[in-house]
Length: 430
Ligand code: GDP
Ligand code: MG
Image (tube, rainbow, N blue to C red; front, top):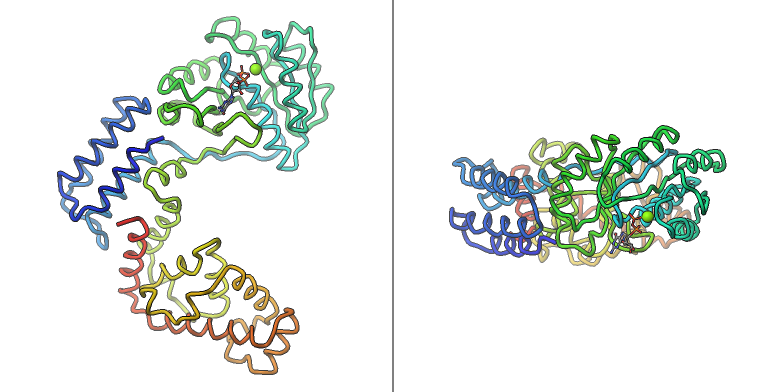
């Protein structure tokens, strides 16, 4: 999805200048890609003129180059287009799934059961699809796979009755009703959903739609919303349709927002919706979000970061805030130094080593953390014994800390702000 935007952003990033022509080319590529994903033309054209207008404005915010400024605008507009990050209630609740034939309701019932069971909830599903002959068996199987309780009656004809019985029968924290679909939202389906709602009194009413309906998701969402009053939408088959982007955008611009997306046929293929994932991917930077947060912090109060003494507490926090591979590198990205200027032993800080450091620091007193200069040989031995390490390890940690402190102390505040920004932008491929 949105591969062209990704390419285009990269191309734009590698250009020397962000002039009118460059912005125009970027906008054209974005337009083309969004239309291919079946995003509503009107929304695409709104987004394009927003980007054009903002990007070519005379004044660029202080501390940003025009190129940086343009990419930030593109990022913001795409994020806005894709709507809000979903907030999911993980506690006990009653969920009604509705939607048309083949949307993925039954599959999603299983995925949700699995999701909530992993959140330590006792989950049950009720088979309220009395329309399709094999619906009962399908949900029964799904419930078994997800380790959820199941209620259904094979020859049942009245779905509301089944739901009523199911509620009596099941003693669960999270109860999910899988309802029947139709080819369209006709009177029969409307009535059926009303009756189920009456007896079930759901906390959440989710419309399940497949990604391949693209922008018509908006119309469908609005119809179901006016019929049953939706809590949100679950977009399935994001893995197998090129129109997923269009469906997401359509929902974001309708009355009900996207809560989950389905990305495959098996139980774990369910994700809480987060537009930032998509935008970051489009911009070619998985961790763009955190970088932008850092920009924001700098924008608001660069001095706050440098306030007070740099203690071992700060060192520990800094270490623990960066995880995974390339860890030291990432940490160093935050400093206005190039890597070859670093003391050699700082460049080879591995994850294992950092874990080791954390264990050692856990054996220190608060006093020692605040003023590590008090840690002399005898204390080193005690700390090593307490953490199951060698006094040499403790010494190494303190040496590392001193080097980090030296750098922090040497910071010129203005250059840190600028330097930091530069490093971040270089991570964004600029
Ligand atoms: P229902 O009629 O709404 O209950 O739809 P089903 O749950 O029976 O799903 C219809 C078909 O879509 C089945 O073949 C599912 O395996 C498939 N399906 C459901 N969700 C997804 C998804 O997220 N990705 C893919 N690739 N297939 C899905
Ligand atoms: Mg079904």
